[in-house]
Amino acid sequence: MSTSLSGPGSAMQAPGRGPVRTGLPRKSRNARNHAPITATGLVVKVILLGLVAGIAIWAAFPLIEAKMWVGLGILAATTAGLFYLYLTRRHIPAKYLVPGTLFLLAFQVIPILYTATTAFTNFGDGHRGSKDDAIVAIQTSSVKQVPGSTEYSLSIATKGDPQTGSLAFLLSDAKTKEVFAGDAGGLRKLDAGQVTVSPTGKITAADGYTVLNFGQASGRSKEITDLVVPTSGGAIRSNGLSRAYEGRAVRAYDAGCDCIKDNETGKTWTADEKTGAFVAADGERLAQGWKVNVGFKNFSRVLTDPNISRPFFGTLLWNFAFAIGSTGLTFLLGMAVALALHSPRMRGTNLYRVLLILPYAMPSFAMLLVWRDMFNTDFGLINNLFGLGVDWFGEAWTARAAVLLVQLWLGYPYMFLVATGALQAIPRELTEATSVDGASPWQSFRAVTLPLLLVALSPLLISSFAYNFNNVNAILLTTEGGPFPADNPTNGATDLLITYTYRLAFGAQGAEYGLATTVSVFIFAIVAVVATISFRRTRKLEEVYS
View 1 (tube, rainbow, N blue to C red):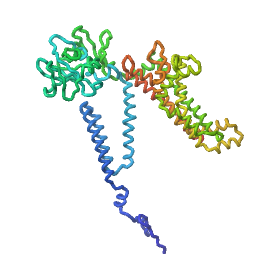
View 2 (view 1 turned 90 degrees about the vertical axis):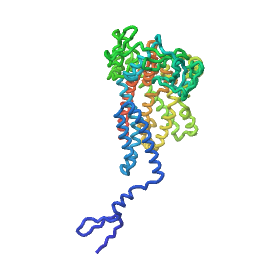
View 3 (view 1 turned 180 degrees about the vertical axis):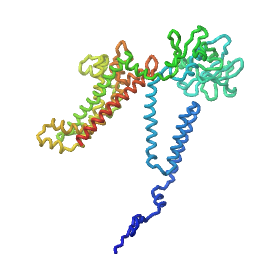
View 4 (view 1 turned 45 degrees about the vertical axis):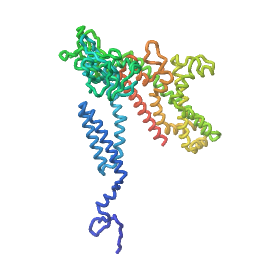
């Protein structure tokens, strides 16, 4: 008869029965699976959850004020979910995945979605807020002084920095001796104990405000002139730097006709909900409009409007040439230098490597400015050194060649470093075997070294292409997008889509964010398609050489 001894937690087979499991009870095993809570861990958990609660409360008030109940519900559900997740001992994997997912949503998904949705609107200068905001802006901007208007002694103040802080009017009524503070949000009465009034009736100090002196106020005269303080009877505007008046709005909104009427001329501008503007019978539009959904209008403009589509497609071709040239040329030069230094017959390789990566160690923005001066026609180093008289940035093709040369100098050290690392990972036995088989060095490189390099470096080449496709610094700090044709000062010969988009968004004729984000959507789609195709080809290459 044999006897089987089993340790704790093992199973014994009893005659005629199933296995009998011995060892720790279920409760003990569960307790063993949970790590004890330390004092440090508890303190960290309390601090982090307290921070989450504080952020949630801080974010809830603007949502309540704006009556965004859906957003408030999402905020409450997210906060409750985080508290449940980190106050329970279950769902261990989710505790590590949720923070990264939230950051991904906050900093990647939501900005992309917001950009995409903006492309379907007319958002831009004159179309930023709601219709009610536009009506208020139209009425307050038409305020004029009329007989009997209340006049005030005016002091200019700010709650922040005298040069950059938001402005406010400190007003004193000589007749009633009342004092007020007003800004774009409206007018409020001040307690006499909060201010100091000079014998002339002007406010010289006020609690919570910094009164500007004459020089500081003069430096912001345009902002002071543009500031309008809405009131129940009209609005208050400045009359110089020491006086203000409460005027009447010449233009008023009539809800019956959904229009703006000018009380002096009788002209009427009717609301057009499709364009988000008030339009007169003769086609005149008021400058103040509101944000509306315009569907695919922006996409249609980019593709069909000759003033936009012609420069767009021309810029797109140069954009591809620039990204491919910047990536390809730097890769070829960096790989060639790496192959030369990888040769066992090469001496002093460490010194050469240090010297070759110097451009990579320099701040790129500073070197771009240096290169811009080197290409100067009159005193630039390149023309003086070679005895040339080339106007590098005055002609389209010379400017493009100059930009690519600068990119080559700045980018090849990076390709040299990554190619050096990839070459060192390739076993020398493979190239030696091809030599034994009678292959020439070029045949060995083409059949073995280059494919293996491409397998290792393809992801880096794809990312380099995506970076150079949107390399705004390389253009703005050298050519600034120029040279520009005489008939189109908004699109230059070296402009990339990203710099063209920047000029659309912040152009001299007013910002058109909706149109600019439409171009951004095209850029995103182009880079995504190119990256997807490239990764698929890379995967096939890996399968062949794996």
